[in-house]
Length: 191
Image (tube, rainbow, N blue to C red; front, side, top):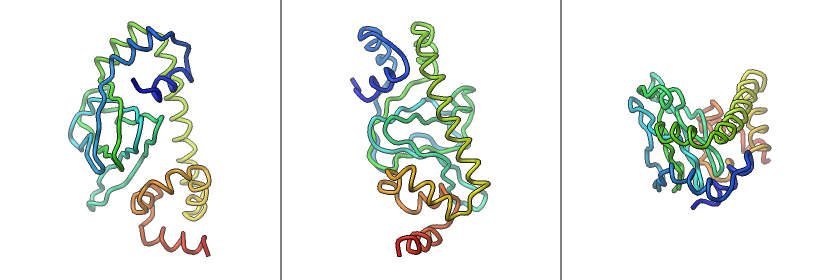
């Protein structure tokens, strides 16, 4: 059993050991290699992924063929194309392992069955999604209000684990700049 997932659930709700063991039975463990795709554009997002180790990213490919990273997920974070997952429609995103990862995957039907049997998990997912939505709102605000340099400084100060673990070209994609510009920016800041 994943102690990380157990601790994460207990961070938001009270649940006894027996129920928690049953809840974890709804999940499937997936081990992925670095750069392995968990979802490609056009597929239906079959799982909501909880990262117990490693790092995932979600991205789309623009009309010029350039990958645009929209989200990262480290340990304790969830990631899915929620529109595709909920509606079981084709995704316009890709999900890929940035590094070797272990994820706990929860399918839609399994999630629905689990929520019926353990309604306290509704609160858990509500709290998780509210936190994620708030983070997205802050990110969008900073994309509008901050210069690219201010955005990088904010991101590196608040999420140093990404700066250390995620390749620079992926950080540049996430921050909306070219890898060359990010390299120049980092050199300027360091010197």
